[in-house]
Image (cartoon, rainbow, N blue to C red):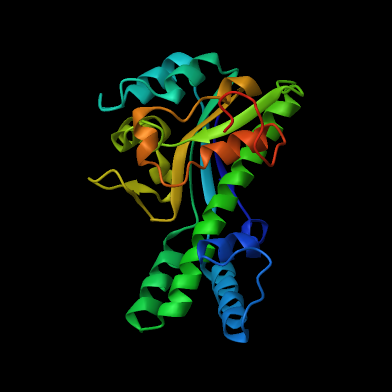
Length: 247
């Protein structure tokens, strides 16, 4: 299955707290009238200019092994190299909220509207993440309709540039998936255009296959260690526990 998914912008309007977190404002903080106005304007601009769309394709374990090998620049040992071999289902994906949002952000900065430009950038980033979540949900629903989901099933996304998967891996990913069909192109630097885009693989299998310790050499270079939160969320957990590899 290879499918282009049209997504309603209203379905991926980002959550207020997610946007404010990107602005360095903790949840629950009261906002000044100025910040409230900026947030509302940025949300309105997102709804006006964002054009979310995604492309998804099933891929077999042997096929993904070839894609994952990339240009031979991955770290010698990575979590994904072990995880994908245990998967029940794999799918490559690419998604974007389109070029118009980025162009609007650039216009705002060029016009010295830095505060609004920065707020719109945060809204766009959070909206891109929410678009990815909607693609996750779509793919899981497809598997569920085919009877391929159980209460023990979990799914996480993995992308080139993270967890030891070198950014040059985008080249083979694009060669298999062809995201240019939804307007995403790959630059010589392996960055995507439009900038507000995400690509990678969705790995579906028993939840336990996604557990790993963040003790790889490259983990020390990671600023967020967001994988910890993602793994905890997979198990419905919101705080530290004693499960090996979750914290």
